[in-house]
Every structure is written in C-alpha cells, then in structure tokens.
Image (cartoon, rainbow, N blue to C red; front, top):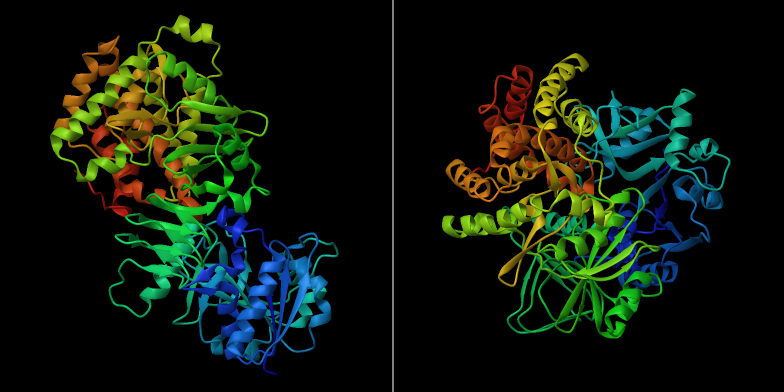
Length: 631
C-alpha cells in the first residue's frame, strides 16, 4: 500500500454546543493548552508523513484560515495547505464531494478538527493494507455514546439499538479511506459520510473499525468536554492529575486570583481577587467577578446574538462593558446566560419551541411573587423571540450547600423551603383559576402513566435490560402507587421541587424552574424535596422536616397518608429523567444521581405495602449501581 500523503481536515461546523465561545473563537482554533485545535491535528498528520492538507471552511472561515496558516508557518512544517470554502454548509459527505479534485489514487486521512487526538497510526495502516477495505475507522471503546457495532473488525452498524453495551464503540472522526469512498456519496449537496459507508456496506463492501492500543481521544463538543480534554491531556503524563490552569502568555492575571480547571485565552484580563473555576475566558474579556463556565464580551457577539444586546438595552447597560457567562445546561430546552456589567448582573433565558411550558415562566413568576412566594423578579419578557430576562439570584443552590453544612444549618434551610411550599400549597384554587395561569395538565391517571412510561422507556429497558414482560409487571406495581395519589385533594404544586431548584441568595432563598406548575397532591412536592437524590437527607431529619411541614399544611392527614407513595412515584419519574439525560454528552453528569435515587426508592418501598416486582427491579438496579453517597 502506498503511504497516505494527503489529509482532509473537517473544520466547517458551527460549534453550536460551544456557544457563546464559538461565536468569538471558531471551534477549530480554540486553544488546547495554548495551541489551536486544528494545529494539533496538522502536527499529528505531518508526523505521519502527510504533505498535502485540505481544510474545509464555513463558520469563522477567515479566522480558521488565518490561524491555520500562521501556525504552520511558525512551526516550519513541510506542508502544502489548501482550503475549500463552503458558502452553504455541506456536511461531511457534501464536503468530500466538493473536494473531489484534491484526492488522487492513494488512501487519504479524514479527520475532524474539533477533537483532541494522539495515536500511532500503524494499527490503522496495517489493517488497511491487510484487508483492503473501503476505509478503516478509529474506534473508541470506552468514551462517548458508543453507537457503533463492530464484529470481527467489520462495522456492522453505525446506529446500534443497544448503545453502550459490549462490542459497541464511539467513532472518533478519524478515517483512513480509499478514494473509492467518493463513489458511494449521495448525489446531493448536503450529506454525511456515514451515508456513504452505509450504502457501501449494503452493497457488500467492507468498512472496518479498530481501537488502537494506547490511543488518546476526547470530543470537544461542549464547554464541559473542552475542559475535560485539557484535564485529560495534562493527566497523560501525571499519575495523580490535579487542577489545571491553561493561561495564554498575553493574558493578565491580577493578584490573589484563584484559577482552577480553567482556560484563559489571549488578551484576557482577570481582575485581582477573582476566582475562576471550570471557566473558559474568551480573548480580550475583562473578568471582574468569580465565574464558572464560558464567558465572552457581549460586544464581540452582539451581531450574532441579538438577545444579549436586547437585554443590555433593557437594562440600560453598555454592551462594551458587559460580559456573557454561559451557565451549565439544566436538561431542558433552555439556555441560561449570566450577563454582568460592573457589579450588576442578570440572567438571560432563551428557550425553544419544544417545551411550550417555558413560555409561561414569566407569568408564573409574577403570580407567585404576588402571593409571597420567593422567586426571581422578571426584568423583561420578549415572548416572540422567546427571550426572558430575570433577576440574578446567584449560583449557590441548596443542593450545593448541603454537603458542607452542619445539621442545624441544613435543618433551618429546609424549614425555610418548606415554609414556601406550605404557602404555595395554601393558595386558594379559586384565585388560581381567576388568574388564568397557563398551567401544565393537572396530575391525573394520564400524567402518572406518562411518568411510569418514561421510567420504563429510559431506565428499565435501556439501562436495566428488563424484558417487556418484566417491565409490564413493574408498571403494574407503579399503577397501584398512582391510584393512591389520584384521590388526593389538588393544590398548586411546583412539580420539580428539589434542592437544585432552590437558590440561596443574600441570606434568603428563591425557587426556580417553576414553569411546570400544575394542580396535584401536595405530597408530590414534599416528597420531591425530602426524598431528593440530589441531597440525601438522614432519615431522622427527613421525619422532623415532614412533621414541620405537616404542622403548616392545609390538609396534613392527606399528605401524611400518601407521602411515601408520592416518593415512589417521583423517584420513578426521576430515574427515567436521569436515564434520558445521561444519554447525552452535555448532561451525562446526571448519571451520578442514579445510585442515590435507587437507594431512596428502596427506602420508600419499605414504608409501603408490598410491591414485589418494583422491589425486585430496584434490587437488580442497586446491584448494578451500588455506590450511594448517603448522609
């Protein structure tokens, strides 16, 4: 086999999940330890003997081309660089069709620009020479979604129905391909190269996948993954990796600053005493307060991001003095950004059309505040572009406060939250109806069925591998639980009344994420808080707090009688949600709540009449996820 001397680097993506950073710095030129990502790929390919490199461009084309040329020139690499401009983005398959002129009759490398990669290519080259397939693809056996099935070195499918199971892999985005690949590309402008592989496989042509030993790969699709790649890259040479700081030489760091697991890009200025933790600071950003997550100057992105400029105008802030700090995804169809100007701040919420209840957030907030419930104030509301501007009530949640707090402090905090719950649940139904709130459908047989179907579809099946017959038996037990709740007197409930949705702010507290409010049993809210997997409470404290709430409840007997039924119902819903969220790279952190949710479910079941099928399922699950940091 002739040694590959050509490579095509795919660098035309939008970098959507890296916003707002990718609006300022296109993802291919984001620094990985102060070196542009794309140059890491070029240096790797050059070491493999590549001499001709083609880069496709779309979003941030000028910046990507300039950074690539400068990096290659400074390193003095013996490479010829070409660029393929895409006025309309073409996808990986369309990009190959457009670049057909670049290839000759020798195999070529195809690689994504936005990954951190390091490997010896020998295994791929040897496999290609021995089997002469259409392509050999680098597979990752442990990380990522693992949706590719490989059998005896051949790819069987790219869309496994059992992702994450044995013999499934993640495709890393590195191909060693024959130019024959171009024959299988769809005859249309936009397509994926995977379509070409699938077409080839249907015609009997082999596509192979291997996982070379000692290889290193990380996807950099989101801010969390970007930071993890820095951490992992540094850890390769350390036995015990510690917190990292990747600071550009031209950045200015003030005295007494604390930088942990953070990237600070060129020209940024960090004021004295500021703490950066899990932060990404864009070029030329001035940071005057502690931050987590990505932060960019609004002035640099306002042409692309009108919501930030709209918010600045409503607040009377100068965009030249305003930063945008993107907050971590919360598992809903919303993006949260903290806008800061000098010592002032506000929260910008942008929401899509997938979850209609998000449009009710502003009206709900105003109604709750009128009734003495502590929620953030609405600063501005633009329903048409689906943008909301809210008071900033801080980032410290009850969930974050509990682990380091003393018992009396925790109890006092929870009493304050339960006071708010009791006040919420005592709002007269007539007043709620007069307000004509756009509430979600009331808890009913249909809603409870939806919750247990979520539990089956996202947890019992894909994560626990229970058969359809076994799932049916478990759902029957849960239907018995729901039947107990259906007869409870309805009140206005928060619906997601958990520690992560309670913010501690200026000596007080504020409830958030109340867009899902509906009528239902008060016990659902109380059990959601006191049996919360996010902050596991000791049993004696949970009982004291339940008694505290009951002394303030409008109908304490009804709440007490169904409390543990409500806990089982809520925990089943939570486990289904954790299964759904943990399947996404952006929200995989929710997987860590599965063990405490299972432990709490097992505790709840001991307080109820026998539910044998559900109990067996939870015992099986606890054997699979035994770890639980219970207090």
